[in-house]
Image (tube, rainbow, N blue to C red; front, side):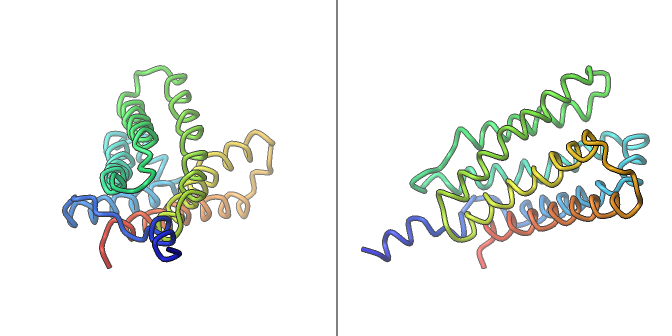
Length: 191
């Protein structure tokens, strides 16, 4: 009985049905996304290759999330609606990145909506499951907190604009994206 309850909650792998090469390509895109978040590269990409930045930032997470959504179908709580909300908001984010003529307010609304979905859904996954799926939820929440919410709060609070502080914030942002990419890859690829 105890083993059956443990196996119900402990999820270390989900079978997405996606080919391994597609998952690996998505993983590489997420690593590139982390590199793009380094400020000089980010500014260069915004000025010279906005379309490439939009594709890289959308492709990796979309493939990973679609794979997780498919792989979680047989679980006791598949959270399909949450996955569809995250996928739809990532597609909307792709459109706002790709189409610079859209008003700034639309991009801001999409970014805030992503924060409002990632954080509770990540915590819901972390509370509902154990094993690797628990880590996915935990790192999903940390990903949005560190890469999106913390820099905005830091800026709004008028934090000093020193080199060390900025380097620390960039290192945390890049690091959390890399760890999140590894966690997503690990649950989608059978070990």
